[in-house]
Length: 344
Ligand SMILES: Nc1ncnc2c1ncn2[C@@H]1O[C@H](COP(=O)(O)OP(=O)(O)OP(=O)(O)O)[C@@H](O)[C@H]1O
Ligand SMILES: [Mg+2]
Image (cartoon, rainbow, N blue to C red; front, side, top):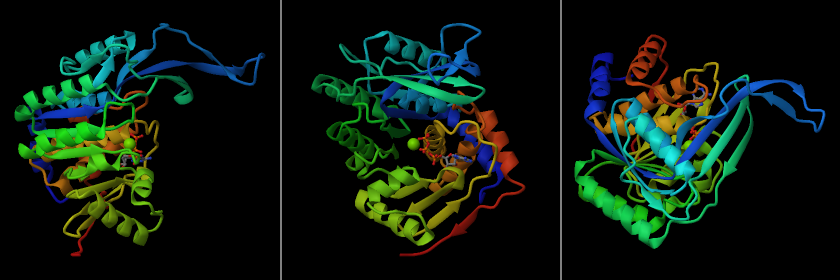
């Protein structure tokens, strides 16, 4: 890391004073754990023995996981989006509350189903996922309420994250309205996009697609160095953003800047338990660190370390500020990050 560990420690401490708006699809994630030792005589499927409480463990999912990550790191997350007026929505609101996040800014839309994913796992392996959802765009009235609530908050925010899971909260006109409000206040905008919605990335500060999403958005495969570089540059130009950060799973990430500079951040290879939600941790750390004064390059390096640390955890996908600081210390002695800079 270019920055020394003292200045990073200072950045991590500054997370506490940052408020980040998180606009996106709020979902309920549930995990039911058991033991699988035999195959059912009824059908060729494993039998999962659940020896414990029947109620599954719950976690805020989607944009809720980004908000939970921000809160776990000491920042303040202010959620924007819609959820249903249903049991899953109430459970989600109470889970957010236990993490210190008020759901008062979320719009409860009558008749809407809060998306709910139930994962069934045995021995740290996911066996099945049940999705309870009916995807449809939020109503015009809900969209108007989201925009108004954001407008009353934007003056108190240090950054805006848009976390699109394509469940209907992130609509192009609404996203562009929020981006315009954020730009007027000069707060940075961080977008975790879905390729089906590239237009919501326009004029964002940084977009963080994974490699597959980046390929779809750029309309080209990016499987070798040359293709990655031209794809990254194409995305910068087409999306009109200041930075594109392509997350590349076990390969780490690559940051592209408008000036032509490219930074590679290889990940530390580890025994990985659960990659679910690594992208949420990445954007949470990126937003907090950059809003706390780190350059985009340093914020990305820190988010890469955070992504590498969170994949070691099963079931949850959050890191505390202390865990991030210790992951950073572990990464310092054998670090292999390289900087490549090119004008273009
Ligand atoms: N197997 C791994 N080993 C080390 N680090 C990893 C691994 N997988 C992911 N990471 C870290 O997490 C970051 C984000 O991962 P990835 O590119 O898979 O995002 P994603 O596909 O958006 O994840 P998500 O499942 O949350 O959508 C990577 O850039 C890297 O820093
Ligand atoms: Mg992702």
